[in-house]
Length: 264
Image (cartoon, rainbow, N blue to C red):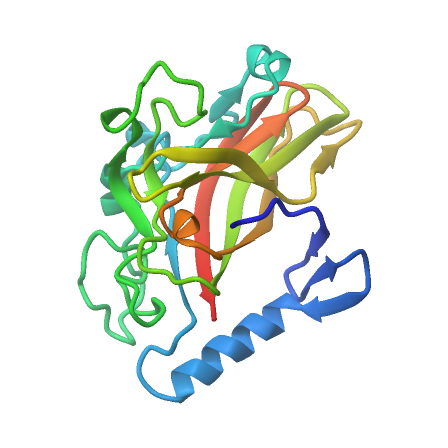
């Protein structure tokens, strides 16, 4: 079963460290991931570990070529604050087709559609896709329910994984604080499902909260946070997963992208 991440995570552009078991063991995540993927690639084929990326958040503005305009975004309202909501952020096939296009020519992109920015080139062995852009929650469950997914579209796709895999998601997003001294909690909103697609347990997989103090109001701040989970059972493989945000004050969120990595 996946777990809620209760350890402290600190990230920088050059190195990222994960404090495991309250400081007893410190590893360099970036180097470990790079070494693991390069080693598996060098041994032939796609290797076992791999990754995918998408920027296909459904609320990106069509009118501005799917680029967030200054000050615009998804509003986390006072009502959301009062209800302590983890606001789930949807994905969209329309936006995927517009923004997930390779900007390089070497190596030559595969041209495969519906998979992500890398068009399946770096997926883990045996994995067809790590994103499902066509999934509509309300087509499968009561749209008047209380799971937190109501009205959402798309999902991180774990269907081709196996017990023992580790899921790591780097969630990139901008925050525009509306009130000083605001704390934002990024998370993966995670629902295990049984073989009949019944949701058995829903919870946030959190990472370290981000604090915005005095002088931050109306400024835009880029965040690139890492969130991880283990895949231990068929209920994890069949889980529903989307990024989400919780805040203790109103904020504006501009979701940017997801780097989804599977480590074996």
